[in-house]
Image (cartoon, rainbow over all chains, first blue to last red; front, side, top):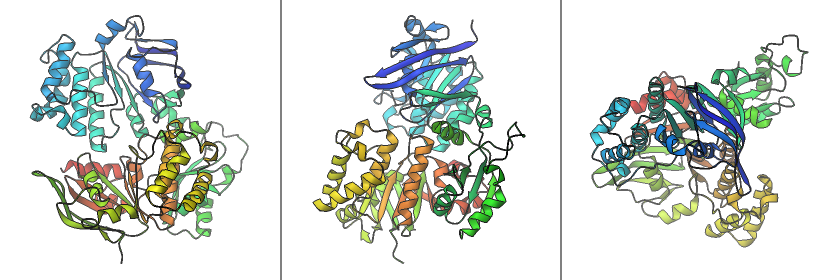
Length: 319
Length: 241
């Protein structure tokens, strides 16, 4: 038994002239939560469809739980659970009927694997006679997860489970995923929300069908090279505009309450302290503060910042 | 003060379910106002009433000084609206979409022409003017949709999850456009599921079960809830429900 749960090797897929997935390779270890992080159109759903045997790749191979996604598709489908991005349960069946249906299709019973879904299903139980179509977004998502789990799959594929779901429901959903990982189920999950990357064991950052980076979330943020500052003032629109003209190569974008200013060059806190001094190296929180005050900004605050996954994603997009 | 948006006990019931429960708030001209809430909290119903698409069950609302209950058609002409789900006709070209919306909002032919030129130039879309919208990257489409929503120079624009699903860079470039519009005095009412975007708003309201449970600047809200970011504020508030 391999410790690899998913192995994707040089996968490519085009729709007409659009290259949806370009030469994508990655491995997911058994029991890992692996995130495919990228915006709409990055190729996430295409990869999911290939790995769940619903779409043939143009080139490359992939295996899931040791089974080839093309040759062994029948066996494979017994061992995986797939929750597509769009709600795909029967809207006219009740909560309980949907779950019963999926259990039957996979030749099992709700009772047999109840332990796996208990934590999630107890929240649905009060509504078990309600039609699935009449559930709220968060409840639909929980039911879909139960249906994808009822046959006790070894690998779970979750395509954008958080899209269109509010932050509270999203947080609860991730708590459920972490409990599932503890029962040895491998989880491949995709999301356009970068903050969810931090909840995965490892992530692949995906853009335009290609993987830009694969690492632990900490590994990705640690590899950020540019000097990074966070700044705020009373007029954020003008602050961002002013910081962009601070010096050549400066990029500035809003990041929550602060704007992040990334300067050209390598961060002074990087592993190579002997680097020659660049223009940016002389720029400090003090000089930025002075610059902003000279531009008439009120209530200025400038700090050294640590890169987030989003800073890294934006940086990789520039490359 | 003339508010851009003002509601007074605005309510909508469907059968015995109260989707929006007597909400009262004001939005100042030129403000970026974040309209937040969990799924099913009543945001969409409230937005539909404010844009003249749904008749309130009781209470009142004025948008750009117009009573939405009495003159919903007048409201529609004075506002811009953009959502991620529906904004542009994919099977029309960039130019055709601009012309269509210009026509719908009753702009003169010469105005549509000059506005098309300015808009294409500003968005750097000239080379793609005669391409179908369906072929454009999502980020470009959203920027175009926003500019089209501003075509008839509305003083108030409603943005319903405008940035959902786009990459982090495009999301921020989109917010540059929002800031820029606010700087020219346009009022923006924005819904979003990205809590960092809540921080970009001047003030934010959070709806829970049909009611506005909190309304303040992001900074004051964080202070009041002893939270480090808006995500935490949101979770603390919604948990009470």
